[in-house]
Length: 150
Image (tube, rainbow, N blue to C red; front, top):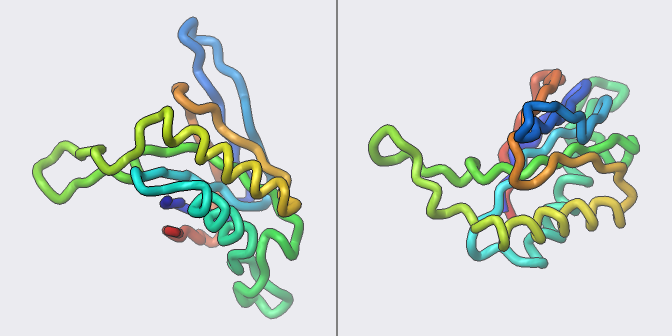
């Protein structure tokens, strides 16, 4: 499981429906925006580990301006958006290969498991919507962007 984690001042995800109508489906203020990818050997254990890692990742500044605090310690929200393209392989040619990305029927329950686990840990979680055309907007804080893997 792979997550591109961004410390944000704000973030939101809007879905565009087939009829062109747009719907805001998730938004947070200061917190973490996580683009989350799932691969073939990921399982429930990986989902639980990813949630714990995200919630406890020390990427927020303390009183001295040092990244020493977590979303858990500060009660910051998390926006989780599924992102199969994190497993795009660009080593050959110019077109990414997505063979390492899990199929939607495998990935969706694991993304939902990460969200459920974050909530059970105490996080306020907003999400995108699986298998839709999503637009993610964010104001990166720092900027702080990390690749987290389990």
